[in-house]
Image 1 (spheres, one colour):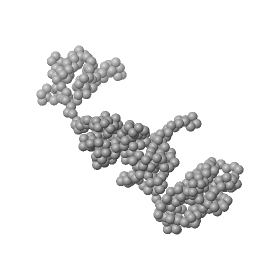
Image 2 (cartoon, helix red, strand yellow):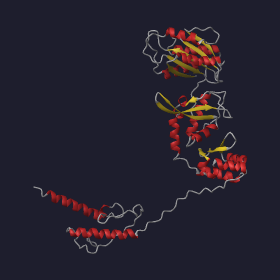
Image 3 (tube, rainbow, N blue to C red):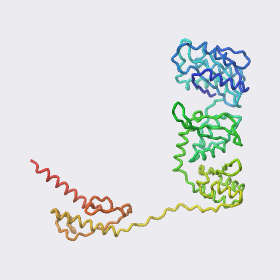
Image 4 (spheres, rainbow, N blue to C red):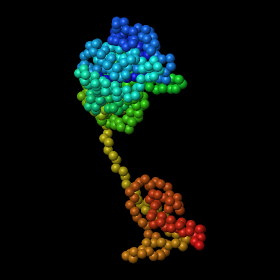
Length: 460
């Protein structure tokens, strides 16, 4: 048995919600505590509201004065109204509400019958029944009642990667089905627009609409979800994204669309659709060939029957793509011409992803420029009275030699990143690309060090 608890300010609103179920012959009052009950199963909202107000203190610090609870036994547990009533009273007693006024209503709007309890949580002296650890206390109590009455353990169904997504069943818990569908679609499929998102939701009889507005001077952007039948007709009241969970919110869906842009590879889908199109003779044949490749085609029509949208859902790559995203030949206009006029689009073959070999840079120009740079730097060093060369063959020591004919150094350049970098005369020591030479850099640093030492003067 699963218990859902919500705190609120409006007892009248909770009573109205339950009265609406009763008026539609989808519910009946089972029992009350300290509230008038005529035994007919109906509810007089105004009389019940006045009874609750009699127990309400004049002053209280509690903001949320009422509690609305739903007790949901496992679908396999078939209970009588007397058993439902007994469960509700025991649950409320263990939760600490035995002396508080409350109302018990059985709901029959779905196959899985369940009960709702509207209760006041503020005592006549103004103190409030604590809601601390409500979730854990409630879970312990429901487990105790399950063991006492031999009921099935009703844990929330966890979403697994291999769990199939099913169409909405009008006879089941519609809200839970819509929430599961939205969660699994968001976890598994990649899409980039609300239109593509709706295309995959439509397969399972769910529709999403964007809402924009302003409340108390602040703009809001949200999503609303609808459960539909096979013809797209709404079969239940819409659900705000906040009622389903954070995964269904506008922020979450926008984030999924942004991340999908870097993950989607259209080539496998385009290749499969191209092959199906080449083998097909018309609309029905094309759709059948796509089905064989585990791809669904969602077509959207105007009131006059013209195709204005086409979306391909590839269940192999878990990707949703508008036809125009695959290519012009797969757009709604191209498919409309093919299906009505018989003008079949010409399919452009999908090119394989082959990395081109990068050309090797020409090092001759670099070698020549490097030689000139070294010559210029050497002459500059000679003018300042500094001469530095590496030692001769086998000596392992350094010796002074003239810089009249420096030998150019040849190095293999493996990077083309600096090939087109401009060089400034006389500033080669500052180049970080091919002009960089360790010996010249060391020579320059030594010159700077000695000049600074000379300006500071001798140590005393």
